[in-house]
Length: 252
Image (cartoon, rainbow, N blue to C red; front, side, top):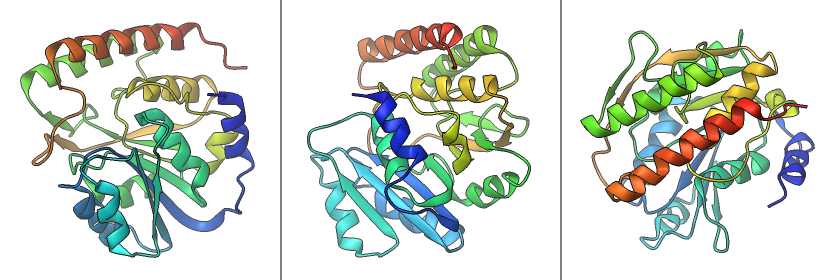
């Protein structure tokens, strides 16, 4: 995949951006138990003008069909058949978005859409606002193994990349669209893309802040990151490698 061409697409989107519009992107794979509730919660908490972009990787459980059946003009579905991956799904959603505020989050209701208005409000004084488990007042209420792994990754990221950010692998964020003039997502892999994204934001001098929230384990569906102990370990190793790569990567 050509990262440079994707970055160019963000900088000069094919459709004009809409002033005041908020674009919220959801990347989905087998989320039929949560997707409708997530969309409705976003719609109820974020005032118009709003667009919700669902990028679905051809889910076998037909998550995409539930989105289609909503027939909501403010919800755009992108069903990808040939391409899969969390980072590339968010990148595709960013390219397709029209808002001058762009956000993305998980579609499993672990991240509260009710926090989005407060995050958007903080964009008055910041370029990037993160929903954070580790900022004062935040918490991670998942299983012990996932809490420990996440803490270890974030402490390692802080040691290698700098301690100004507490939740490097949050994945819950809103940004000014102008951020993409300086920083792009590297559209490969799972959640480690976000660590690289935040690291580059800091190195480019963008203003980043964190808003605390309670991260709860999913009530329905299956986690994509804890399929087996082997896959969980491989995922952790990939995060370590991406952190090290972010440390030495050029930002020119």
